[in-house]
Length: 86
Image 1 (cartoon, rainbow, N blue to C red):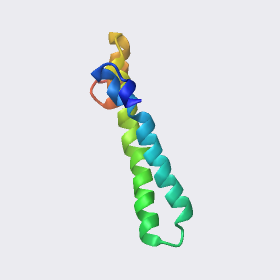
Image 2 (image 1 turned 90 degrees about the vertical axis):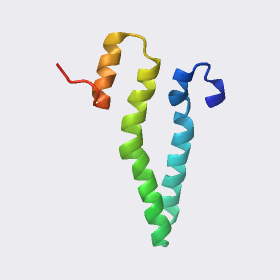
Image 3 (image 1 turned 135 degrees about the vertical axis):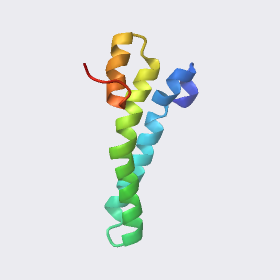
């Protein structure tokens, strides 16, 4: 999908499938590594990074970069912490 992005603003949205694949790889390792404590912990932290840190930031940011309507941009900035709710 990154090669299909025609504009630079589309690139954050285009990397979503790549990052989702990496998250699913970590999820698979969590499922099969119950006996290997270190591998299991690294995979669990990797999965948690995507679930609790990357997605809440990347998704609104990716949509914001492509959005043209100023009212919608303001709403997306609230999710990113760049704008106050009023």
